[in-house]
Each structure stands twice: as C-alpha cells, then as structure tokens.
Image 1 (cartoon, helix red, strand yellow):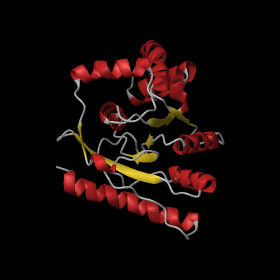
Image 2 (tube, rainbow, N blue to C red):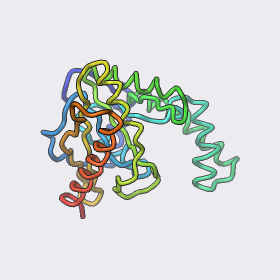
Image 3 (spheres, one colour):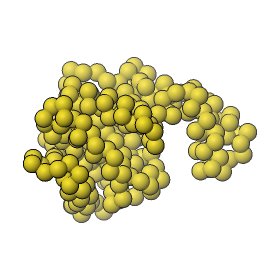
Image 4 (cartoon, rainbow, N blue to C red):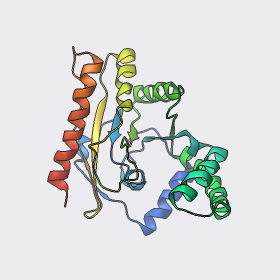
Length: 231
C-alpha cells in the first residue's frame, strides 16, 4: 500500500486478503498515470468493475456506491425486493432469507471499504458531491462507475451518466483547480488494469459547454485504451 492515508478498515482488508487466495489480483499497467486526489472511472460490468478495482488497484480509494448498500435495513430491502427477486427470479421467501444474510455483511464491508454514499434521484446527491470534494481536497482518490447500463458485462463506455462531472464545478469553486479524471481499462482475458492519462477541464470555458467536451474525451480515451489493450 502506497501513501500514508489508510482508507480501508480491518474487515475490508481481511476480506480482500481472503479473496486474493482464490482470485489473484489483476496486473496493473501504466502505473505512472496513478495520481493522488483523482477521480478514477471504469465500467461497472455487472459488479466485476468494482470487484476487480478494489481487489487490484495499488492505492486505497473511496468508492461511490448507492446509499442503500451502506445500511443494513435498506440493503435488505434492495436485495429482497429487487436484486434476488426481479433480477434473479427467486421466490420472495427464498430471496428474503438470502437477502437478510447478505445485508448483515455487505454494509459492514462497504463501510470498511470507505464507501461514499450516492443518493441517486434525490436532493441528497449534494451530500455526495460535498463529501467527495472534501476527500479530493485531502488528496484522497475516488472511483466511480458511470455506465447507465450497469448490468452490461462488456467494457463499453459509450453510454454514460454525466452527473459525476458536476464534481468539477464544486471542486473548482472551492480550489480554483481542475479535477483529474482518469479512465481505467479492464481486460478480463489478459487479467490487466490499464491506467489511462488524466483528463481535465480547460480554463476559460463555461462549465456547461466544457462538460460535454470532457465527456467525449473520456469516451474517446476508453475507446483508444480498448483498441490498444483489448482482445
């Protein structure tokens, strides 16, 4: 572990060490592109992205995750009423039993892993932005997974939510500096994580205009990484 700050708690580190015994971390390429106080972006790939990033990345990061997974009661309802029933088609009684067991572990693991609550579709998203800005000011890094279709197992990043780019607006207002947005490409077959080069907003251009440009730059960066490191 590089750096001084410890983000991950003992429970998370224990679980990660246990997983590493059965699933070795991916090799990280272009480590020179890793920066403190950056926002790392990679495809969700139906949980594979978060799993492999937290398993393999050589620095501890703060992960954006839905707020429901950080509380036992809301986690239980999410698993019972959606994940195990609507997605996996389980009978509700069976789903409830499994959801209860999972909800005793997952929130504890996510909190120990330094999760940042994301309040999607709520005014509380401002809390996410403010907390994230404070973390970035402290030189901690954040990882998020902006795919609109998080169940897509491919490495496609063409269809993204744009909301995360508002972090720049909050951060620049407080620091007069630009955030480093860094794409991370995942190749399952080669078992590698490739760290892309930082993408920043440019000076002297309105936020609304520039965020459209930056989004295209991010998508193009992923396309180039896939062309170079894919297959």
